[in-house]
Length: 379
Image (cartoon, rainbow, N blue to C red):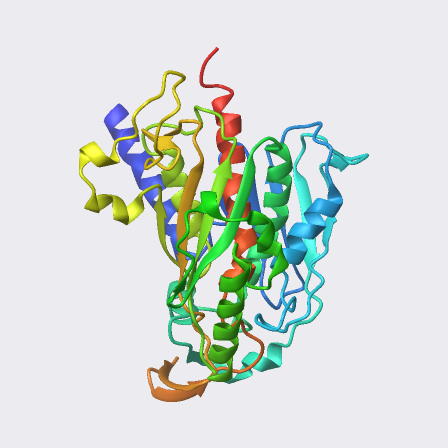
């Protein structure tokens, strides 16, 4: 009888899964286990927003700090980013009372006030090269062509809002990201030699004043050509306690990698010595211990066995050139016909300056989740 019912259960489960898939339900809109963010909204919809579940009660929030994070990510902030003008102010709907978190879900919205959907009418039936147009259409049978809809990088505004709260939960941990590369221009100095106070003094958000001038000029030249350029962001996390990270599949660096690779336009992630470490021998690469448990070097990037060891965590995130360019390109339409198209509207010639706060936000959300998980690791 058990075998009979077991077969029936499997059959019903398979039907449920089939129905779920057949109906085209979009999953994958939540991040985190205990400190969990679920986002909603499209680039040209009424609003973006999210729900933060699991944020501990009693955190006194600095709303000016949250607003400052949003201003770092918002469009139209300088001459080298998209000129779409959005205030990106966050309106909190729940989970906060008298300026403190209550432990209940924190709901928030970010209004879209400057949509120009007509800028995208020319791609209603056309797939832009290297965008999500084709894959979304084939997966769901429908797509919001206005700025890419859900696949637009505008979705990351919700991540920055949630990350700003995660940062305040992690008040003792310092997370700093900066642009370390634009095209062929690279800031090669180790992060320990850089002046992080320079990052917010230039529109590129790099940690060196002279390199900032070169990168800014290069981005402006690329924009004049109707083209785009990629780059790299380095993130440094300091004052991390020992013990964050879970075996075996939820290693700290694995979850950081997932967090970074979930950001639009990201093509690569490396932490610690990264790919350069492959050039070293074990005798050169091992981080030897000091008597207090610290290490003499930090090729591990602050993570050993998937668990933080108390040293600085540092990693690089690679971003591709923005896919929309103001040059004519050959592509296909929904009928499979070859057609010509050219980008229109307001777009970033280089995404990395605005992606700096996004990288920090995703790092904060990852660490906040592990901080809560770590509370139940031992008595």
